[in-house]
Length: 95
Image 1 (tube, helix red, strand yellow):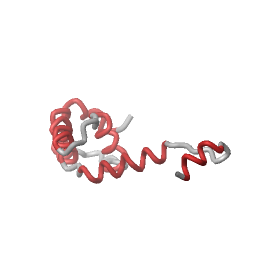
Image 2: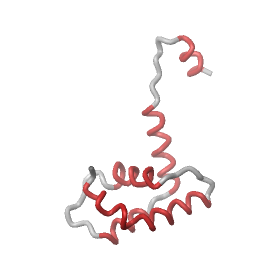
Image 3: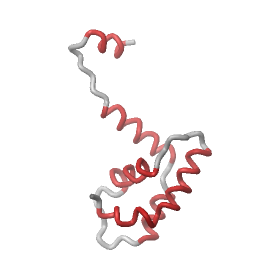
Image 4: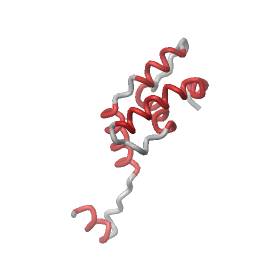
């Protein structure tokens, strides 16, 4: 559990505003959980002990669409496992 998880329910309206922005720009499948996870892994790697609610909201609303998309792309590549021992997978990779 991340130190800022206690703020999640309070900032859900701000997260929803950010999700609406993503949808407006054509990214229909972004979820609250994905945005929250992004913040925890990228912005809040080292939680501050004196964080205030308005700072959390500011971070949520300050998410840049391009940075989030880059993050999810890298995460997807890191989660994909290729076995170079399998000839069919190697052919797919080299297409």
